Image 1 (tube, rainbow, N blue to C red):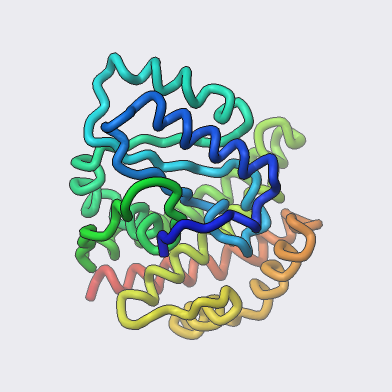
Image 2 (cartoon, rainbow, N blue to C red; image 1 turned 30 degrees about the vertical axis):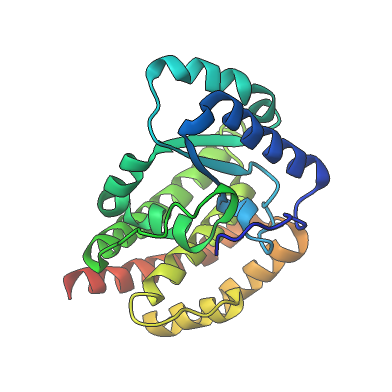
Length: 249
């Protein structure tokens, strides 16, 4: 993935804000700009939250501290419109392929090119580094979901939104599933098949999670998030055990 596309799955206003962010980065960085890519939810047409906070990853040859203020000024309006602009130097990206293996692998596998050449073309991620990142992500996902739901319940929704927490956990579980399965073979492209494959590998029943996934896709959020979390947490704990076994192999 990475070819230029028209982003037809995003609302017109969102597309304009993304373009404004990229144009602003071009003005600020000039010849330093090597690439700009759309990553995260906005790069995946199936995601219910694809327009919520699009992420533009800007790759630059270098970024002097004096240039940061100019970059911020040029992308200001786009960021106020909820575009998240992230910037990495090409050297930082190369050196992130081990310590941030899962994040870089996800960018590499699911991104849309907006400017420049594919910045991940020469990216090499070792299986051992990816497995460690997968274990950290899976364990963190369980803790984060539990604590976000607790924060919602304990503060009457003032500190978090349990429905968003469940939705985010489901989306993140697909990232973990894709990259875990990719360790041995090409993972399924369809989300339902991906869910079946990771559940089978872990010896888990996918049906309750399928129901949550279908509700999320059709409605944009789950109606009973606490009940959904009670359903989702044991399944996620089973995924943690699966990834843990891979780290011990």
